[in-house]
Image 1 (cartoon, helix red, strand yellow):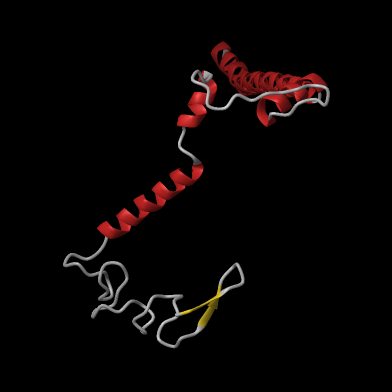
Image 2 (cartoon, rainbow, N blue to C red):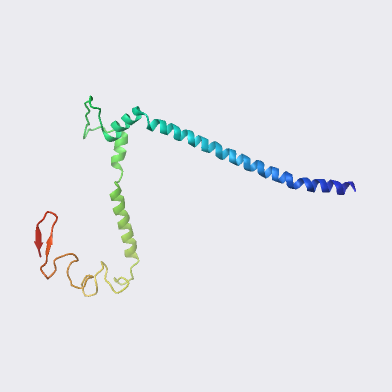
Length: 164
């Protein structure tokens, strides 16, 4: 009889103890997340104070934008033999347009490798977009955008015209 009573007490306490342990675990996780959020908040507040400091703004204007105060005379040395390391690293980096052009070339080379063997693209076109027989797409046999055989005039940016 005593064993049955002890088993009943153990079973009645098992669920509340399990809930207590899971809730303590959840509370610990929430406290850790709260600590991370508070640390991030303090970092952002420090950055906010720094960005609203007139001294920091002046330093950034001088360093990044090469600005001077009205009562100062500023000089910029161009082409010096000894460049600072930070400037030298920025100069050696590839500009954005060069990276973009290289990605276009890589994409073009991938599309060229996907062509059907035998020198023709799918659809009977030759490499480069020309139709069989040497004509380019457009059917007239002349460059797209060119004057062609009809002698039409094209207006240039500077106001002049070109007949072709």
